[in-house]
Length: 425
Image (tube, one colour):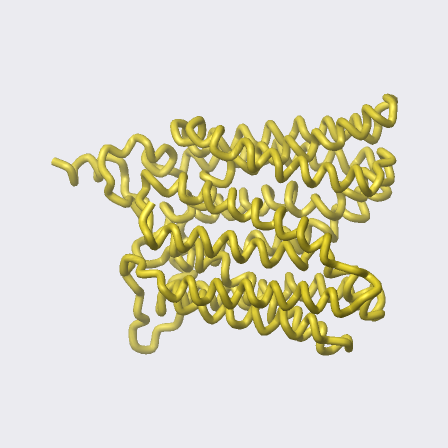
């Protein structure tokens, strides 16, 4: 791991640590501590999603033309200002404006950091680099949330101001760290006279493998991440009688599974076709939903229901650990030279759409229609397996299984395996 990659990973950990300080307590802060009510608190959470959906299409174009580092630095400063102003805001208008700035900055960080990882890695090392990124993100979120929980006091607005100030400080420290990164110069795409950024989007939409991956990604994020703190938690409380402390334990089990399993499954994932790995995740998550069904619809004891519900979150964590070295590297390997930022932003946009729609659909369904909720998302998980198998037919051998490449050539833009072999001759 080079110096640039080490700094990028430090950046991922710091940003996740800062977000872990505030995200779990945002609703309580707005609704209760500032006394703005549940409607405003719900709007704040919606603003995060809306801001991301607005800025991500422009972020991809900016990363392609200017490079990921300038875009990342601008996003970090924006997020720092948003976090600090959120901690000082007392009215609905300022809270919503601050949340928009924080959400926009946070959303742009993801494709910018992902593109920097692409620029600093090769096809052979990329899976491990993204696995490390996911590991550090979860570790940072967990540690940040744990420390933030001990600092917060719902009777004192100043304690929340301190949390947001720490988050802003993390973003500024990260700005200083990332400003020292000297990443390899990736090719930049300059627009021809009279040409807009629509050409790169048209090129992306013409890539059948990328379009299928985006559809698959939407279902993945909708059926998993979009349910964690909405539909699945509502189902657990209403159908399985899960206590809030047990729900917290389930979330901790998810993070613990990722931290423990991430590098244990990495060797397994690296030696197998990416499409089959994703298909396996769909089957694992189908089992997870079946276990969740037992927790809420079975006739066992409360202890058994709680254990089954916690196991559901742990099984989701195992699937996430398998996806982290698979999805993001595949997006990078599908991107033509110089367009990794555009492809990363497009995939981040799909993720945000799924995270915005998932809670809106899953929340009411999980709270009231328990049986249909479990059946629907079990079928979604099986659909992941079907979509993954279909995607595998659109990939070249090296895109689907990078270990087949016999050189350290970065095969971006769908270079066939025989082209890589020919390059060695």
